[in-house]
Amino acid sequence: MSMINTERISSGIEGIDVLLQGGMIKNSVNSIVGSSGTGKTTFALAYLYQGLLNGDHTLYLSFEETPSKLIGEAEALGIDIRGLTNDSEDLIHLVESEKIVEFMTNILPALAQKLKHRNVKHTRIVLDPLTPILWEFPSEKEQRKVLTKIYQHLSSLGTVLQTIEEPNAFGQTDIGATETRVPIYLSDSVVHIQNLGLGGKYNRTCKIIKSRKTPHHEGIYPLNFVNGPGIAIDTSSVETVAMDTVVYDIRYQELMKKVKDLSKDKDPKKRIIAQIAKNLLGEREKKDTIQNMELVEVLTDKQILQEVKK
Amino acid sequence: MSSKSGINSELEDLTHLDEVEASILFRIDGNVVDSSFKEKYSHKLLRTIQWCKANVDKVSLEMKSGNLNKVTYELNEFCVIFYVVNNITILTTISSKNANLSLLSIESKRKALLLVNYL
Ligand SMILES: Nc1ncnc2c1ncn2[C@@H]1O[C@H](COP(=O)(O)OP(=O)(O)OP(=O)(O)O)[C@@H](O)[C@H]1O
Ligand SMILES: [Mg+2]
Image (cartoon, rainbow over the protein chains, first blue to last red):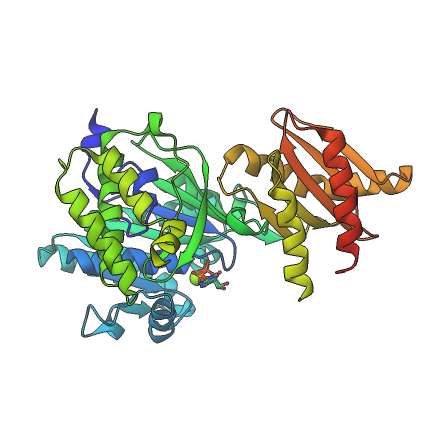
């Protein structure tokens, strides 16, 4: 049963760790696939931010947007990257399209070697988006060869998150398209995000397409843009019977984070709620996650907040 | 009242009915004008909504050629009522399997007539 014992890192996105049974496997290659504007970059920025929180070394390679634009976008969603580091502009590297091949085949392997010698503990690597690299190698055979090599270098260095643009023709997206087949095939885990355009909680969704060494959840879950974490996946419909203790522990931690956020809220009533939640939780055994979870969920419920306000 | 929120409140009226899980105003090409859902999220319902979205163009073509105002589908888990609102929009009401369909048909018709005013 090595799947549970495999060392994992938090994705930084609420709900994803629940669906992946604890987060991403260390030194794996993970893909976020989605059409334009579905939230891939936001996802990647939240992953980067979690890395900064954990004290990981980070390497964010942007093939499209400038560092300052990305950091600005993150800030607009409450992901305060500048607040965590002094040299935020140094965090994200823009790789221009004409230098992509040179960068991926020569500079990156050299950089990987250098960091290894410096004994960096764990690195989070982001490739956002991978798509221009795919264009440089149009044949599948070549793509496979180049990507296998790149992933070998990168995953020896740390845990990779890459975003992949899903072709979108006349409003129909296609995750099985030839353009995306090779990187998806080579990834250890693939998360598919979609904008279904149905409105409400059925508007944006998230699904785990694959996840090696992990018994993952099969469902499609609502995805929301939220201020602070950037993106959150609502996994409250994950059936209780299918959940194990690992999942409860992650949920518990997420809920404690929620309480912590509430306790810092401008609204004094929310702070009171957080205090009540803390007091109640304090008297419980930490093992009792299911009950704790229910309790915090009740306490952070919008309607109950309204009631208390009255 | 703006037309958007007007439409939404009519749709919400429908989803407040016990048996109604979702009500969606579709353009006949499958685009959503507005929608309202029951509070609780459900994968099965999502599948049915996607089925509606994918088929609303064909259904509306059939309805036009047969000169029908209303079509009802009884699927495995849900019942779907399509009700013509005007030339380019269709009201879709998704209810639980055991819903009283004749009653819901009347409700759909009533809402369809109200919705025209906002379009
Ligand atoms: N608070 C919000 N509420 C709803 N949608 C939002 C919010 N914030 C951002 N968005 C949407 O998210 C999109 C940007 O997300 P992001 O840049 O992460 O997507 P992407 O998949 O990387 O897109 P691209 O294909 O442009 O790289 C915006 O276009 C906007 O529509
Ligand atoms: Mg992007």
